[in-house]
Length: 610
Image 1: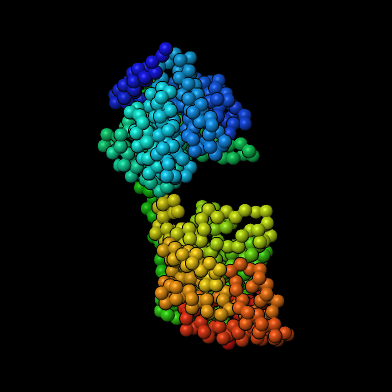
Image 2 (image 1 turned 135 degrees about the vertical axis):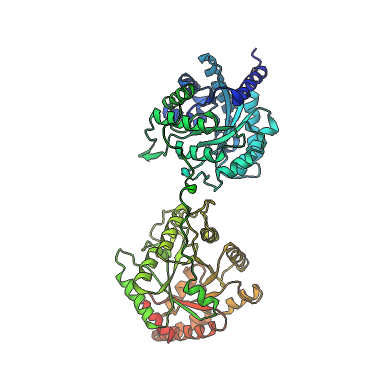
């Protein structure tokens, strides 16, 4: 019987000796991509360990024959939590055990004395049991006979540290810790710089640390350049480059073997002691790395440096918005709400905005973002056009319903560059109420998260914590509904919005101020940020009924409904008088108002203002 423990301890000793003073260790390449293309209908690459072990062994052998000194078990995502999501939880131990067996079998078949590393990847979401999940996987890998661990492809440094400590709690085998860096700024998607990561990892019990996966060789080298020094033992295994989707297939770029040979020469010059590949790298790239290492190839191209050292951030165009100044100085604020057009022609909207500006009675226009979940011109783009053409400051609504966080950042940065500064962060009407009932809202964040995103951009960083070229200067508003059915929840969310960075608020349309009085009472007598009250002059009893009964969040008091019912054909005049009375009352209790004009008659808002 083979003594796994004695065999493994001998290899551990040789591995550490080689890291310290022997030739550079050549790693393997992208197992997951090879297996996914070779074995059909896999729920995950790790399932191949039990469904097609011969394919796993063959993939390992292809890398060994290309010159790999170290192969990783096909267990990157083989932890109980990930497998449970694929209905493979019952096969967890079998998949991990078979993964180690396939790697060891390949070593035996090859006749080469290669190192077998137990691969442990990140968890998709943080959880209270992260340490237990990592420790369970590490315990099984250690027990089945791996020589070391590669804890790899992490973007969250805290989770990587948790994984390292979990491995250490169940095993004394060496650990190689690898983070993923995207692009050449040497930062993870979570905003951790390579230099910061290196400082923290140096204090942990790891045999080597470095960069893997990510955007490709150039990004990995930029990260290694930041990590090098102070005796760091480095490791790297980048992707072949940026992947893309063609039809239903993932397509990798055609990185030549010589390109990877040059990469290996640079990595070796930076102090890397383990050099391999990740997604998309084949035996051809690994052979090129092995050849460069064996020949002690010197780099022939300039070194790759982190881009932030070469491109200083541009200055930001800061400055107080007209709305911010008016609210700060206690001026009465009046805005009129506009709906962008449903087509590609904005001339009517611009003409209305000009007339409102020329009236002298309206200081701002706020712009709906696909109201009632019906597609219209983007509110931020409409705001840019209005501010350019009409010379009136805008308050575009922005909802996280229709795009990802990345998409939100993109359009917000574009609008900021064009001069838009005021933004109202709102949840948005759900898609089911509009023209796309089968659609699902994106909602990667809610309105609180969107407020926090805007605050982060103002602080000079993206949602993920990465530094942006220059900080923004958005003046951020939020919605609040004094007439909400659950006022406790509304207050709790309002307070969280203010904590996230809200600087002003706009209420739901109100038709009496009793609910506003109660809201202010619950807030201790005053709002923490200036309030603009929504006023909607109702023109018919039928409209009042529909709003009260069919639109969530709107309450039309019985006395208002009754007054409009009794007015009959004179309802428009009665509705206008009720709105004027409300407007006068608002001047004693709010910082301003926004007027919701009659349908397709935006200029009628001026009738309310006298």
